[in-house]
Length: 262
Image 1: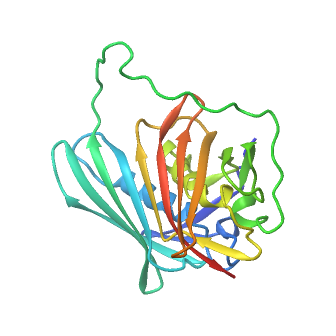
Image 2 (image 1 turned 180 degrees about the vertical axis):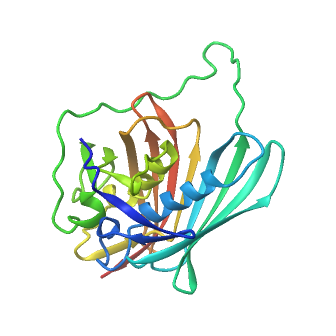
Image 3 (image 1 turned 90 degrees about the vertical axis):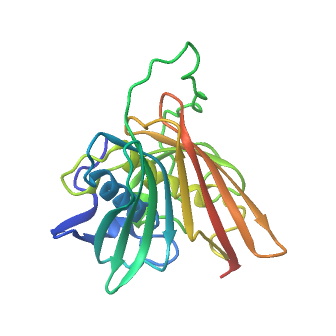
């Protein structure tokens, strides 16, 4: 079961938070993994005032610079208002600079009566019975904050991978994460689990993350089915993924990759 004492962020008031050691990424222990900041921005966009129930259907993250494990500030606004569809933006600042920016389309939430079969979606991969261990080079910080179960591949296995995972605790202390927040935490792991290169001698860093939703994710356990491709002539790659909950597919994710030897 999740360890409730774990939280990625502690609230300081006035839209300020301090990141805990559970946000530490694999490239530098003083820097955050992209998942927790992405989820914190999703939380801010979900909390942004609206005149009717709204739902985020696409969220793009631009990592404008390294995010230190320390104090951060969040701000959000509506860029393009609309009765049915609106474009919203959130920014995470570290010190005096914007480190992460998110853009999202929020749609008015309305129930539909669909014809039979119109609401069907791809079934999820099998759900394993046992946890998978962390691997050398990936252990600690953010990776250890996840309870992970691999169906295919692993942290140190090259090629496509499928992983079920859930957060062991909270995004923000003493809060229950939403489905979107849980999904954004996991979606940034696509390049890590499906890497084609060893983390000890290569870097494959994503400057962005784009998530499209087909429905709202439910439950604690979510699944990432990921694959990475690399262009050796120009030193970049793409990690693409299908995202699932225990019922079926909820969306897709993509990360551009800067690939270079360490």
